[in-house]
Image (cartoon, rainbow, N blue to C red):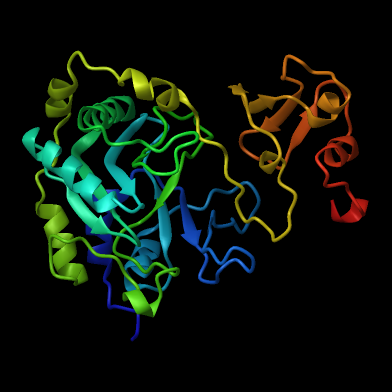
Amino acid sequence: MDHRLPATLDMARAFSVLFVNRRAYTIQSMRPHPESGRHYYYRPKAREAGEPVELTLETVRRHLAGEITIGIYAINPITQRCKWMAIDADYKMALEDLIKVQRQLQDDGIEAALEKSKRGGHLWIFFETPVLVREARIYIYHVAGKLAVQVKGAGLADGIEIFPKQDQLRQEQFGNAIRAPLGVHWGARASRGWRYWYYGADYKLDDQLAYLKGLKKVTEQHLQSIIAGKTVPQEFAQQARRTERPRYFESRPGEFRILDYVVVRRQAGRNWVTRCPSCAAQGHDKSGDNLAISVEEPRKYCCWAGCTKEMIRAAVGRPIADRRLA
Ligand SMILES: [Zn+2]
């Protein structure tokens, strides 16, 4: 079955009103990674260095048509606001949890749209005007606490994931992208029909977009009234503050990734900070803050005590064999 569908710029416009909150985006690789078999996302490259690649209506149209698949970012770092939230659940009891959450939202006067995914789904909430990310996240953490639904965090395999994943971003940050709805999932392939749709309408682009447009949007005033006096529940407070581990974009097979070998302890400015493996091998760096890893580009790391890259690589058991390949 062909995965392409006719899509127009009008459809792209309707989609953008709902989902596009900033112009940065990612593209899902059509080919699976040779080792993991996964279809990774990467940020499209600019023709000229330093020039940001911005999402256009034509790119959105191609996403809807099934020619490419894009990932979108929730947070606009200029305003620290989002126009949607998505609750991602992908585990055995995922759908049950999402339906519980959806019912609670309904009780709070919020209409949410359930989109299928591989094992569970994504529950989407749309705001009439962009709201402060921090406030939107307080609400969902509060709902999760009330329903005893797990939120995925350190050491927890199962649980919902809340997009946006951060309360705020610095200007140069992106946060975590989520696969934009209504397009093709290259990992799903023909056996699953290529696309995951919203349950609430016929599985056609026009009907799906009309359904989403017709949903009652949450106003900022309503959001603020339901979170009045509430904070992130204690059990989630630490992970809610936690910044996400950075991702390696355009990862190459077999590439050395320092974050696979260390556990970051905290973020200090533009760096992750942790114990340097080479210092540790000599019994040094007991305070665990010699190694700095760039948040923006985790391929860059250095030891403040002066360990060389060669020493650090040797200490984690991945010595540099040939400098030209390092
Ligand atoms: Zn060191």
